[in-house]
Length: 334
Image (cartoon, rainbow, N blue to C red; front, side, top):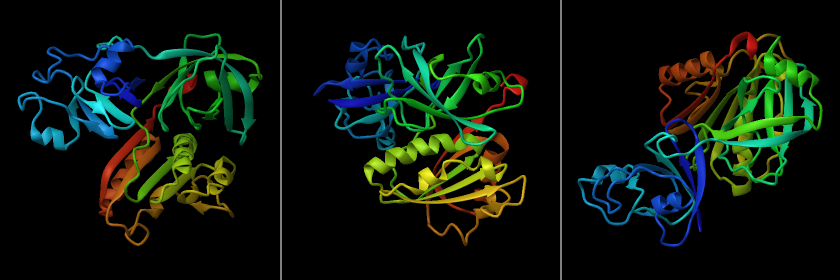
C-alpha cells in the first residue's frame, strides 16, 4: 500500500492509502473524498493534479486530457494515476469541492516548557485514541479555550510521534499568549489540521533554511524527518531571533547525527557574545553561498521573508524551488 498526501487549494491536507493497482481517485472516493471527475477514463482532464513527490504509473489517457508537456512537469490524472511509492499530490480544487473538512482533535496538554521568557514549547496528546498525520512543516489551528478564536502554529514534531509539539511566541496581552502563561498540564485543547502547503520536499540539492523567531518550528520537524532518512545533501540553516535568549533549540539541532546541517544564528535587538548581530540576510553573499543551485525554504515574519527573497535575487543566488511561510499578525488578540 502507498500513502498519499492530498493537498487541496485551500491548504487542507488529507492522507489516503491506495491498494495495489488502485488509482488515486478510486482510493480517495473509498475514503469519502470526491476528487472532481467526469469520465473516469482519462479522456476529460477534470481530475488533473500535480505530483510533488513520489512516483506513479500515469495510466492511459488522451492528449486532450493531459499534454506531454504537462506530464513532464509532473501532472497526471487522478482517475488513472496508480502510486508506485508514497506520494504528495496537489489537488487542483478546494477541499469543500471534494467534500473534505479539516479534522478537529480533542487533546490535552502533557507539557509546557518555557524555552525563554517569550517562547514556550507546548506538547499535547490526542485523547480519543486517533492519530493525526501531517507533513513536516505543516501547521494546525488551536482553539483558544473560552473563546471562538483560533491561532495557527507549525508542528515541531513528526506525525508518528506519540505527542504533537509546537513552539510558540508569547505576545503581550495576546489572547492565546495570556492563556498559555497560566495553562496547566491536563488542560483540554481542540486542535484542527493538518493545514498548509509549506512542507519538506525530497532533498535533491543543497538546501537553504531561513527561520525567523519561532519560524524555527517547522524546520525542526523537517530536520527530524531528514534525520530518519540519513539525508546526504548539505543543509544550511540561518536562524534569526530578537535576543540571545530567544535563540532556542540549537542544542537539539546540533545533536542530529545523520544529516549535514550547518546552523548559523543571529540576534537583531542586542549585542551577543554567542551569536552574530544583525539579520539572516548578512549570510546571503556569493562568498557564503557557493553552490550553483539551491532549494530555499523561508519561515518567519513578512518583512524577513521579503528581505531574504530580495537579497537572494540581488546577489544572484540561483535556486530551483522557493517555498515560504509568512507569519500573519492578529494584532492585540494574538
